[in-house]
Image (cartoon, rainbow, N blue to C red; front, side, top):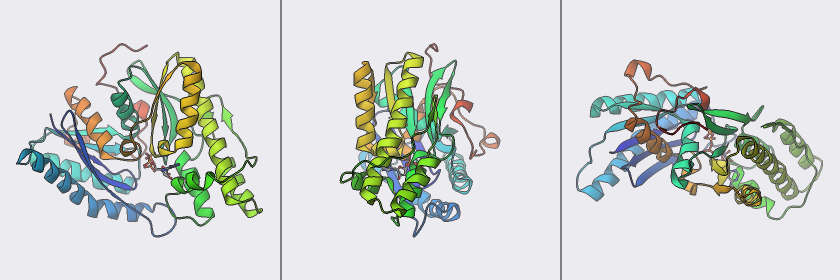
Length: 331
Ligand code: ATP
């Protein structure tokens, strides 16, 4: 079975081909000239780059098989994400599926962040911490759906970090720059906001900006920002493991590329005898590989869409998705 995946919720115009074993991914990233992601510019990028990345993965597949391999289905990121970007990707997927005369599959982007880790780790029933740009939440499977156990009460974790770095004049994306600067930093006190399994980043962001404005070294604020934010995520992840009884934690999303976050989660899991898995970096940030891999599972379960029902959903929550591809009983 071969599934073509297309991703385009925000910045990554990405296509992937999954043939059951291998996943070939081609991504063309939108990089804003200044500031953060501008929805119209990002959609224009999708419009230009999606045909290119699709062509590239198909050509790559032809190199290994001497001819263009048959495609069984086209999977696309249906949401959540930026409406203008999603509409371009949805249109591309419908057009391709129509041309190839194959079904179209609408994949929830956040469930794909989770499933790529569960798939690679071969975990049965993990808690998933999705730490991405626009989101931050904990998911676990129960009664046929991935339930949201806890989430950010305001901004996503990567977006919070990026807002801070814009304030200090660094280009987007800010996460990797904070990670680098934090290596030379020392502790500054910042707010720490956890309520049960929910959490908030807006206060800590304002305090971090103010700390720099008041003269604290930016390296110190970066260090403390990481220590606070990642400790919050580690605390709620541990609470979720404890309350569900799961002994498996999987990490998803682009902030998962941060070595300090992975270190904290790994230590917490080791301390309580749980297993921890973070996918390889190419599967952490937005990528079409995770869309193709979950798309293949949905296709095998017969979970395809009729074209009139295939509209995108910028607010598509993970717990709206009936999990058709798992045959196991819920715990
Ligand atoms: P979503 O997946 O929720 O739709 P998104 O598309 O913005 O959001 P991702 O592609 O998963 O998110 O991740 C991008 C985010 O990851 C950016 O905010 C970026 O700053 C952050 N990021 C990338 N690398 C690192 C790192 N090493 N440390 C911290 N943050 C990082």
